[in-house]
Image 1 (cartoon, protein in one colour):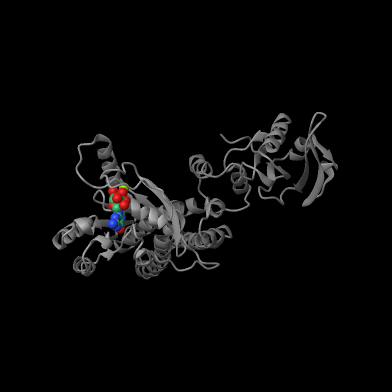
Image 2 (cartoon, rainbow, N blue to C red; image 1 turned 90 degrees about the horizontal axis):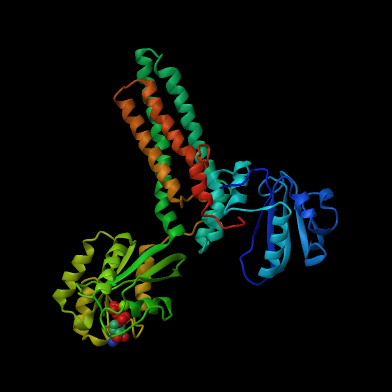
Amino acid sequence: MMHDPDSVIVAPATPPGVSGIAIIRLSGKEVFEVVTKCFRGSDLSRATTHTIHFGSIVDGETVIDEVLVSVFREPHSFTKENSIEISCHGSPVVVQRIIGSLLQHGASLAEPGEFTRRAFLNGRFDLAQAEAVADLIHAETDNARQAAINQMRGGFSAEIRKLREELIHFASLIELELDFGEEDVEFARRDELKTLIIKIKTLIVRLMESFRDGNVIKNGVATVIAGKPNSGKSTLLNALLKEEKAIVSEIPGTTRDVIEDEIVLDGVRFRFIDTAGLRDTQDVVEAIGVGRTREQLKKASLVLHLVDLAQSTVDGLEKEAAEFQASGVPVIHVANKMDLADALLVRAAESKGFIPISAAKQTHLKELEAEIVKRFHIEKVKQGDVVVTNSRHYEALRLTSEALERALNGLDSKITGDFIAMDVRQALHYLGEITGEITTDDLLGNIFSKFCIGK
Ligand SMILES: Nc1nc2c(ncn2[C@@H]2O[C@H](COP(=O)(O)OP(=O)(O)O)[C@@H](O)[C@H]2O)c(=O)[nH]1
Ligand SMILES: [Mg+2]
């Protein structure tokens, strides 16, 4: 549960552990009163905004640490409330003692995302911008960083707002003129209205299309390594990650669980997932592993299908490749253990679209990486580019587009204006959910609970 909006909240803003400096953050109307009770230094109640004050945090007579206190007065702070940041020495014990003191003097421990939630509720920014704050913190590639900062600075929100305004204009036109117009005036109007809605829908579809890249930018590409036992899946995972992550053995069925890790190739985050080999097995534990492999395959964005050339025939390769192709997920066929196969078989595999490699000898790994990268190449996100990266936004856009489609059909089938207006209002509702004009406590709870403590 969130606290009373007037209460003073406190949380560490830097991660736990040893560091040069740690920052403790507070926000709320009475923040100066709370901090003054355990601060020895200048009089904070008279401090002007954006000033820094040296002093110490005390617990009775005991000095806990010497600190710098930064003062932000409403509305000139992140939350738009009175706020304080205490910079102390970066020891978990110091942070804990200072927070303990502040709690004793009337502060409450902040929930995850509570600072950003307050900032949103106080109108610092809209919901899509608030979500971008979390995306920026969690950005693992430069593209993810740029997309997040573009969204945080309001590029996406401005587009949505523009579309909403056009739709509101449309709704008013339809309500005022369609029903009261003369017959022939009405037909002319309908054409104009249709043009307007098609234009808006085109813009929405374009935003939806950006999610293809945006999803990859934000969530990375889940890449499953699959194939028969002993084809060299775990060896390949280790070779790609350049570390001994998975156990490699000549005993088939060694990998029973799903093992994964990420690397960034060409600015895209690939999450490689090693799996239990696909085969029918009597071993109960291995069978569970095979089941999990099939689940992973369904969720994958890319499959590396591995075959063991030492155990393959030309016909066998073709048959297995066809089976994997049937799943519908993009597949790269990889023929492993080329060091054990004769040149003829290697050439045959190549002609069937396999990339021949040796995972153990690390041959042709660069070629494989190049093929992986080629499948998910993403243009560098530039300052100001609008890219939809959030599946919640994508879903809202999809529903908007559906509502507009219904409105279009309504115009074609000449139903009355108020029915069309209903669809347009629905479209407005979904667009409003993106920027937070329309919210529920559940929606906000869902979004902000995924934030870090102290953000
Ligand atoms: N000669 C050779 N052996 C390999 C190669 N890749 C894997 N192996 C061996 O094949 C066996 C099975 O490998 P592993 O990665 O555990 O296969 P998995 O069951 O698909 O995960 C191990 O003994 C590996 O050392 C390769 O490129 N060449
Ligand atoms: Mg394995």
